[in-house]
Amino acid sequence: MTTIEMPRSPRATRSNRRTTRGNTEMAGWLFMRISGIVLVVLVLGHLIVNLLVDDGISGINFAFVAGKWADIRWQIWDLLMLWLAMIHGANGVRTIINDYAERDSTRVVLKTLLATAFTVTVVLGTLVIFTFDPCPAGAPAELLPSVCSA
Amino acid sequence: MWSWVAHRVTGMLIFIFLLVHVLDTSLVRVSPEAYNAVIGAYKNPIMGLAEAGLVAAIVFHAFNGIRVVLVDFWSKGPRHQRVMLWIVVAVTVILMAGFLPRHLGNVFGGA
Image 1 (cartoon, rainbow over the protein chains, first blue to last red):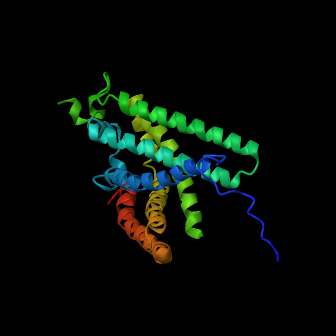
Image 2 (image 1 turned 90 degrees about the vertical axis):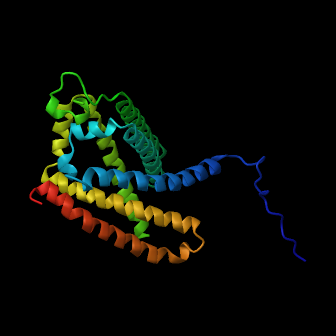
Image 3 (image 1 turned 180 degrees about the horizontal axis):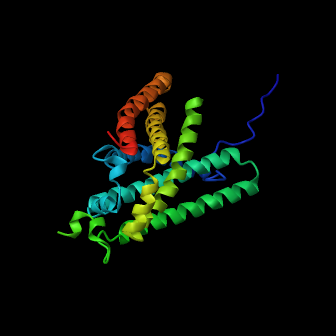
């Protein structure tokens, strides 16, 4: 009678698992779906307000942006959109790099570029939203939003 | 398979634009004149057409993303994935049919 060998690898448990990578990737997978749903609302809302209603692209200038950011609710909207879109997009590009860049050195270079672009863009965008002055001193009045003359 | 390719291509495109878009918007911090100069570049006809393509990419990515969520979390999602792809394509076409006349009217003037 033949005997069947015991499976060589014991079942993975929390204590003998060699890596936690499965868990972080799972969290990333879930984040893509949750942030994606929120971004559908934030980004389509952004497109409707900026490109569809009133004069659309023709109406966008400093006064338009300043008029929006004079309202804290648009600041929160844009800040949330910036962070979620950057994390969602950077994680997506990371997946693409993992899939197509086969050499380790290529991956390191591309991921370093990605991390740099991510950090610079998020820090710059966040600073701009928080330090923005809708009525800068010395600017021509006709370029400023109506809240400045009130 | 092709929806997966399209999701990657549109996602990559949107991410590249996002980096540029944060940079151009940052000019509001420099001066009203600097921001108005760079936003003026977005109003020429070639950029106007590129924006239409970008909006189409965003709309497809948004609704195909919802389809991916439904396939993953809805028990009947995998069975209906093909018909849901056609719904995504139809929604994209319908929304673009509403958006394009307005946007192109704004870009090319007149309307």
